Image 1 (cartoon, rainbow, N blue to C red):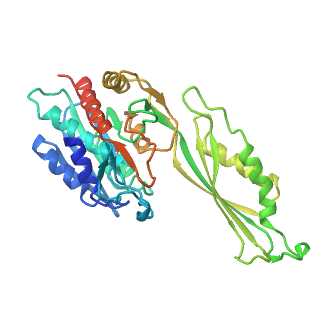
Image 2 (image 1 turned 90 degrees about the vertical axis):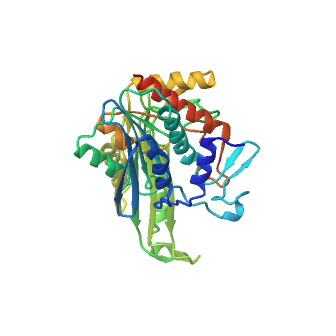
Image 3 (image 1 turned 30 degrees about the vertical axis):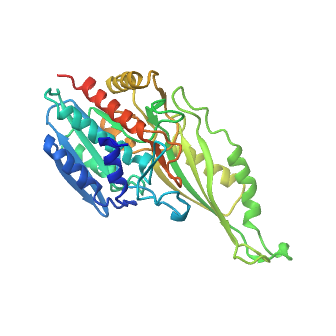
Length: 377
């Protein structure tokens, strides 16, 4: 089985671009699109490689946003096929990045090749924005490129993100916004001692436990019409010296809140600080606000995408704001309408990540249809 989209996805998977490495993926894409008059600009910040590929100067501008970096594969012995040697089995393409998101990047490229390889033109411009920093800290990737574009007055009208949005079947869900992400670290201090003499010690884990139970049970908000409620999850908990007969002197917990616009990061920080104080803990809190919630109002991009998906699959997609964050959060503040569509997300970041090869072709056809609908001459 072969197709231009499948073949390009394979070529990208073969490049082990574990974040923040690009491993030549962006150069390959720039080379593919150069004959179609896409001007390539590499923007490198720190260890991160970003590519801005634009065809045309006229407005409106449609941007395809994606990333070429992938998460580490984990124990390679657990993979049925080596993670960076793409394999097609029973119609499924296996490899790290197949779904998240080298398959979508390949679909971007082949959609553009069909549109701009044809005789007819378009009204407006198309660009690809690719980064090798989406799976990492996301400081020197799309965020920095967005700042660069804004500084030189290069406006974006529509941004189509290729993140794997589909759930049960291809095209069943499109993302029209994302929740915010707030990371917290809480350190509770006690007094180290012998487990047989607890009256001479102060166990910080015991002091922390009632607070954690309250945090886990808390209803932070009830969401909005478009957003699910804010959620709280503990991501790490550590204490102890490694010895079984020692009461620890300190306990540390890391947690994350994915929050809807019904809450603010500042409000959540204040509520948790008040809860810590109410429990009388000798504690220290640290915060990192990694994403603010965003949502795009229904506009031409959403309409074009819904029409294209419906024509391809026979069923309209369901708009959603659930799931994690995406680099769309850096483009939305520029005033662009941001919508996301990609393949199924069932195996992303997992061992044996895979995607249906037929879905990649369908995705490319949908991207092509969106270009034609939005930029019809």
